[in-house]
Length: 111
Image 1 (cartoon, rainbow, N blue to C red):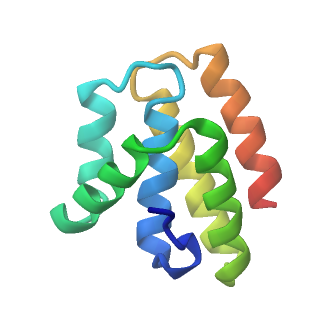
Image 2: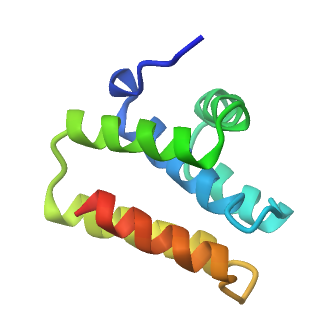
């Protein structure tokens, strides 16, 4: 079943993006998941976690781009989103090459 990413709320989209960041290095560690969980409700986390588990990186990026185009974000909202992305990448105190690459891709999609 294909999800209509444009129907996601901004919070759902943020959690989906952060979950993609958490699995960028193929290791979803507990600290990353805890950080993401405190940013939302259990219901939204569970919904977006399930969604993210069914998607590969290319599908995820397509969904993110579609949802970002649908929503109107202010500069401040985009800045907060970028900061939250960096928090997830840095939670394990190192940014692996796949995380760095995904960060650049997201940077291009977000702006």
